[in-house]
Length: 506
Image 1 (cartoon, helix red, strand yellow):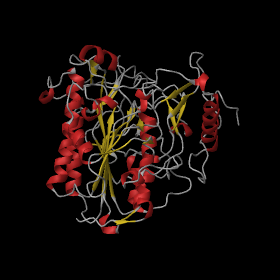
Image 2 (cartoon, helix red, strand yellow):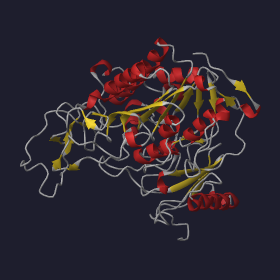
Image 3 (cartoon, one colour):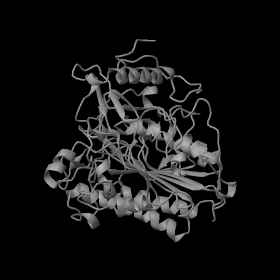
Image 4 (cartoon, one colour):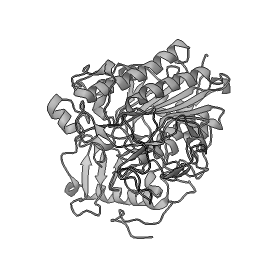
């Protein structure tokens, strides 16, 4: 399909309806900035598919998740809204809880669906689902509710949450292909650092003393389907993505959200990749992940879809806490040059790989070095498709379409707010990052000038009181107002909460 593009002032793009680009959003789990070989000259493994995305598209070198852990980042990339505006103020969800995306909220999927797209989500959800019954009394003949099919996706295949949470089964639509009627605990993983496996044998019998008691307490047990094995996730998700793209309605453009489970624990590379890297099983697992991404790229090439398909690739947060041992043992820095990793308020917790490839429009081998947030994806797609977002949607999302279409810079970028697993805040504006105090006495206010100190080694707050004051005022307004973007008619889902220690209650 040939793409028709008209250049307008300010590098805007107009697309005729028949030429709307397909969109694939690939999201890895716990992949650090240094886990793409094109971003890390000292990497102990190669990622040719990611390197190809960079070579054939645009690399965003200063891209950030909205949080340094899983559930909140996934909420934000799909909705364009900070998760701390919801009931989730810190930490992550399990598998079974009301979905964090409330009914009626605009998502990337609902935006594209109303723009004429076929929409699919294949992979790990981790935003909450409503399962039938309780843990002792399930009725798997009944449908799962409050899940991807209720948030704009027309097709769903995947798992509810991370592999260390129940419920584990291969869900397609609202039902598990094989119901999770058995139970298991984590098993030792001999190939990875401080890790586990989810694999047979599984237990049966509700009267087993290791299984749920009369109140339904699981005692560390996971509900699991007899056919579920952890190392099949990447293969199944990639196979299903290729199958869905192949069998889609070709009269419509398509959107696929593909959140992989790797390299999050358990680190479980298939035999084909064991021993292939110089960074242990973790490097092997990243090589397998990259290979599956390459399978998607090859499929687009084979069927002539690559030219007018936008691929957006990123990760949900920085690397797991095994990164220091990996750096010591293998000299591979999963966090690159950045400070700390997953769960942290510092750059290693939320600065992540971010590539956009769109051969029809984005200049191959280009880069963008100004800060962006993953929340900006929904506003960018709306901008591209000339779709107006509701006034109560995407409250914190700003379009980076000018970057994709050749602008030298974005002139009016609002500050970006960072957040960690404990609920601590930071704010980024240009080259300055202010880390706020928290409930913990050891967490004091810090200021970093990232243009000269990207590794956050020198706290310069005493030297720049004016910048500190300006950033505190900006952060307070963003948090209190319910939106970053002026004119949005939205409020936070709650009033003041206890991590806003620098603010007065309202």
